[in-house]
Length: 81
Image (tube, rainbow, N blue to C red; front, top):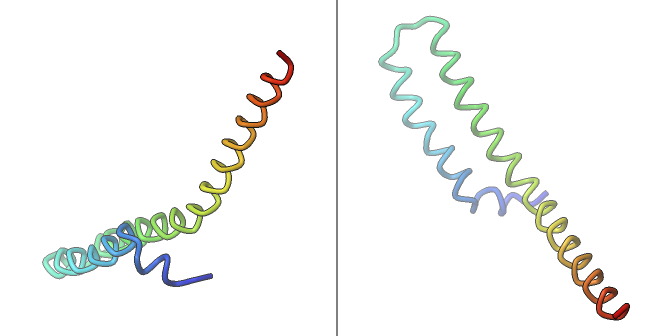
């Protein structure tokens, strides 16, 4: 697992910068359970972003395989004519 692809991804960077806004927001809130909900939502967003980056290479491989299958099907169709 390479950290570089996560640290250079704009979505991950934006989610991490969003922690500053979440921090400011929770400082102005009353000290009750709602603070934990706000931080939980921020953490869920960060986790979704990281998961998206992790799956990105799988998606690219799948698209490449689909394009190759299309090329093979076209080639077979041409050969059948």
